[in-house]
Length: 199
Image (cartoon, rainbow, N blue to C red; front, side):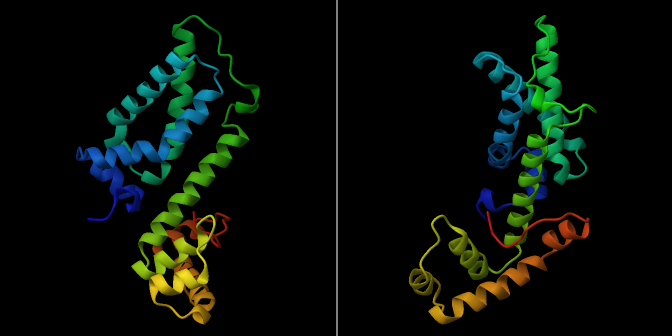
């Protein structure tokens, strides 16, 4: 069985619905940063932050089976987190002291949240696309996109690829990545994204 970190989002959601604890833990790991990011804008105490975070994950447990499109999960979590923060402040008799940069005139998400959602979505598309490549192709891209990237000599030794063919192979594999179902679906939806680097 593949590592949970390699699973695509639909598989994780389905396994979480089926009460797979490892899948649920991976789902929380992937999106905990987004939930924390939204909560920070409401300037809650540490205890209140923990309470709201737990409520958000409880709401997800309650509604996970109703999420028809796993790709929408990041947006659902951001919206639910905002609602839970506002509800928490109302219940506790405090005004909603939200960071002004969080809200626009039309009450939609702030640019920072939009950017984080897009980054999360793009990362997930790349992970899903990488999962559709052959293992050696995936390893090559991950080694080249590591920080710092692996040296060509080390890649050659580990993957058994001649040093002179690493660059051309990288170009071919990136082409294959762009042709995976995950990336084509994302690009076909009219989004503008850069697929030249892996997460």
